Image 1 (cartoon, one colour):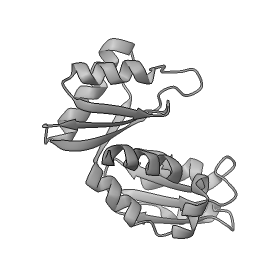
Image 2 (cartoon, one colour):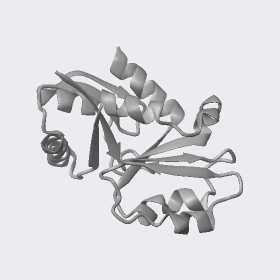
Image 3 (cartoon, rainbow, N blue to C red):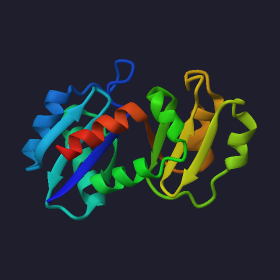
Length: 178
C-alpha cells in the first residue's frame, strides 16, 4: 500500500464549497481507501491505497466529490515520501521556528517557464522564496496576508498550486507517519 496525502484546493473557504471532513473521510472510505485521516477543515487528507496511478486516483476523488457535493476541487496527490522530501528540502530552516511564516506551495507540475522576476518585483524586503522542482517555498516573516508576492505565485509560475504553512505540513507528515 502507498501512503498518499491529498491536498484539496478551495474547499470550506469563505462559506463556499462546503465539505465537512467527517463526510470527506466517509466518501474516501467508500472508495476503498484505507486509514483515512484528515487535518483541519481546509482539505488535508492522509490515506493508503494500492493504486499506483496518482493522476487517476486524484481524478476519481475529484469526481466523487463532484457527484456528491456539486463541485470539483483540484486534488493534488503526494506520497508520504514526496512530502518528506519537500520538508527536508526546505531552504529556510529558520522559518520552522515560526511555522506560520513559512509556506510550501505544492505545484501540479514543474513550471516550464516560471516568471520569478515578477515575484522579485513585488517581494517585501523581508520575504524570501525559492522554487525547487514542484515545490515553491516562501518565507514571509511579516505574514502573507498582505503579501503581493504570495497572491501572485501561481500566476508567475504558470501552474496550479496549493499552499500549506509549515505547521500544517508538519501535522500532515505526522499523520502520514502514524
